[in-house]
Image 1 (tube, rainbow, N blue to C red):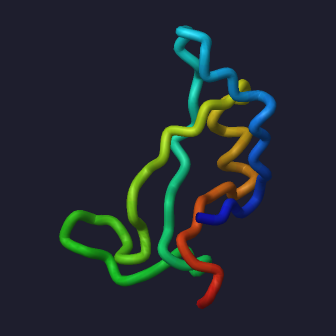
Image 2: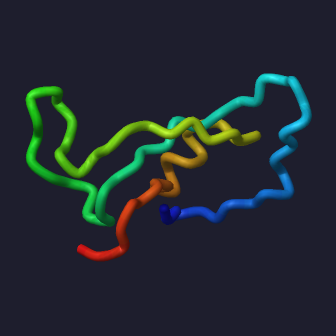
Length: 75
């Protein structure tokens, strides 16, 4: 899996805490081309699912930067 528009920092993740962290609902796509044929569900055939990514920033912060996870770098 690849991330586009951001970078992953493991230092900020603290697995031993039992707190609920704010999260960003990040889209996961098959390819970097963020489009495809609309399926009957209303989602693109390129769209896989939403990933819940812990973040101390509001969701709009990541949306404005176009952050997404990709399964392939090839078009």
